[in-house]
Image 1 (cartoon, chains in turn blue, brown):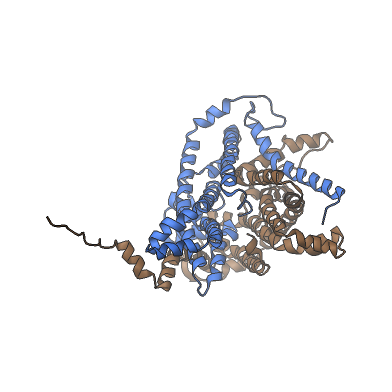
Image 2 (cartoon, rainbow over the protein chains, first blue to last red; image 1 turned 90 degrees about the horizontal axis):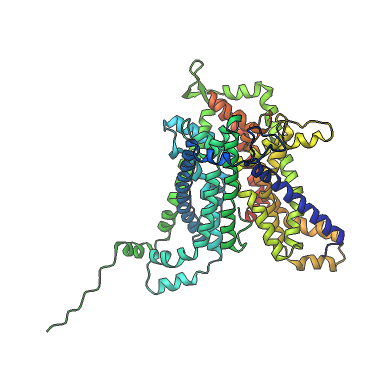
Length: 266
Length: 299
């Protein structure tokens, strides 16, 4: 089937429209980061770099960034270990209930976050657990596991078994084979899973808002409270600007390691 | 002079464990599954179960605290007795459907263009261009729309040219617009992958058999890409159904998530727990249907 000239032009126009729609809000925020006025009206009043210094020296911003990085690192590490174990089980063994495992693992990300949030909050309250970084990590790990699992199992499906069998024939025990053969060939799958899990955790607010408690701030929680106070908006603009810039990094790494292979993988 | 032969080194404990485990398949499987599945059951399904229990527990009239194991259906009676809860549920589900349809309509042409018309180089650029906003922070994007929609913002300014003023930050339509924006890449990427998987030969066969392009699209392309569309819709539908931050920040109209969150912090936990059964049931039915339609292979 070849598309007619008219169809092609229409599709091109639609593509341009969607891209414009996707980027308009990001561009607007980037502009506002340099707005000299405290008031967010359009068009902006003038140009300044003043707010960058203010954001840099804001202690709340610093604490929030450190907390977010800590939580995302731990949640990603937990997710990688658990996701890899589950993927190895599902891909390498046949057992009753195997098909159900993917379904169960996908539930924490497919069920609305508000459910995960209130379920964990209720349980922590019922069991008397104190809120803090640890409770945030638990919440994030539940939905990050499936990210690692999806990436690893996709890779395992395509890996030939023969190198592992050769390794076993040459006398390596199963742990050595895993460490020397399987793990290295999963490297990029683990990296892209880790990237996505880290980004999801760093960005999470729906569940975090339930499991953080009153005194712990993450970057999204900081933005959430700050944007409701008009005086803090210029600082939020700068944080937003930096976050938009930083989101280029994972996209760059992801396209480099996968060559587009897992581009459609969520 | 005597030559000494070193005895074969005793195998390491790990190695002996590996050898012992080798024929024991069930045990290997158990060892692999105990942490991920055990953890999932204890933390996630355990938490869901406690939530379910709370829906059937009474709360103390004075302190607002839940009294464990005091069985009652008071929360459900309260939900059924107040029309507000039905209105909010219908509104949330309605917006979730509207967002899903909007995103499907926006995603189909760009995904088709990316997969079938663009040159490999342009395709690569477009994939990155769609991925970038996906990785940008959720709250940053909602905040951006807040600045655009609020009084004196870009929309107000644009409407001003026609002597009108923008909708401000009160209208339900804002939630529809912003949520459609937020989840659009989640719809584009699976559909793009779905289009890419369709072999060209099928389309040529359809053409050879006399199918016009529009017929081929309707009878061949759409059915083949449908599982991918369903996969994308899981995200657009579920994420809308469970959001309470965006509705809170860009409009006045409450969603199911707002009712759940507000009641959890104000202390009517049984009501929040009972109300959260609505999205749980909807999503489990949705996921089971999606699995039947083959959407899980397209995730």
